[in-house]
Length: 466
Image 1 (tube, rainbow, N blue to C red):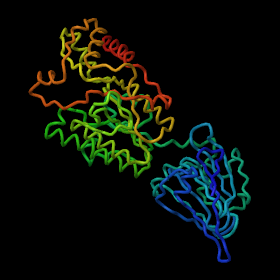
Image 2 (image 1 turned 60 degrees about the vertical axis):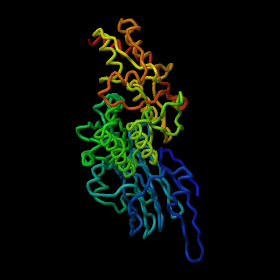
Image 3 (image 1 turned 30 degrees about the vertical axis):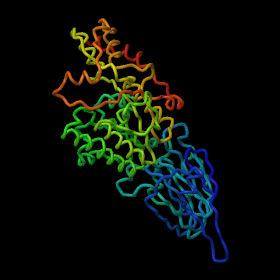
Image 4 (image 1 turned 90 degrees about the vertical axis):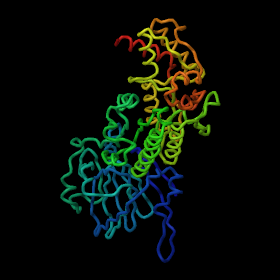
């Protein structure tokens, strides 16, 4: 068994082995282990269809369906032709091949498929990774079999062929709109990170919490998941201290674990890539800098729920767990609070024994985009801004200085001392060290900017608004 690439990206030809004797022949028409090892996508077929072509000259196509398929011949021979109808440089590219039982072709979504039977009683077989329904015809792409610009040399002239009225009426290539790619869905589009992701993915479907609440099972039906290729989960229960209360604990698990489990089932069913944003809180912080392979050791309920969600996502074939820390965006956050206190003349007490790096949402979104565009391998990826590791108090002093205040106006306290100042509120245990190693993301070609550079720009912008 061998695999050949073609001029159409993703259109792959498989040369199969026929085992024959005086009784006939046998072949492995779909052999997942062998074929995926050769490079065929593990496309997850769910339906097997067979077309019987009674006479030579039966000609069908060109149809670009909203799924991938593996076509083959069970009996007879065909002349196969394929046209790339996806947007891009190869739009309109044609590939042809004569097929018998010894050949199979993998046809990716958006590539139009056509064929002509060359002998009577040709049996055409195909596996697809979505279930056919009449409603899905609206998502098809079509081009005329006789289009002059395609220049397909059908062995039996189309004037002598047997074709359906629908196929005869298909549009010429110059009238065809490219088949759109699979959709991207951003969950939590109304949050700080979600807003930054929507700027990076302007054609994505943004889903706000009012539409989909991960903690409410019934709300998942509000989203049409068909045709979704990527799901970016920027939603989570992040009230770290509230998660230590009885009601907060239940909500944290409902959103960060049960909700993520439902997303995993949806991603598996629709063969979607799930991008899931994780947290430094999955660690106990005893290691000064955490790499992607460190085992989870959460201290808090919030950290436990995030670790559990990460483990669920990690079971998917296509996934990216993007671990980050100390996120800063357009909404209310630590830096915006410090700016407000500085301008109001207040001198805060800030913990000086928790260490990490800030992550600005525009850089987090850019890193996620980079991982998707470069088809990064599934797994966990640390992604924060770069720069020296600092304590919260040091960052607060930087903010005060940028606001024209004295750095000494920030009082440095321990985590324990800070908790004693707020005895009425539950305080979740936090990792002492939250810095994440960035070697892997840097080696993948993405270099996060220094957080101090971003901090200066962020504070200047906020002050301009005041």
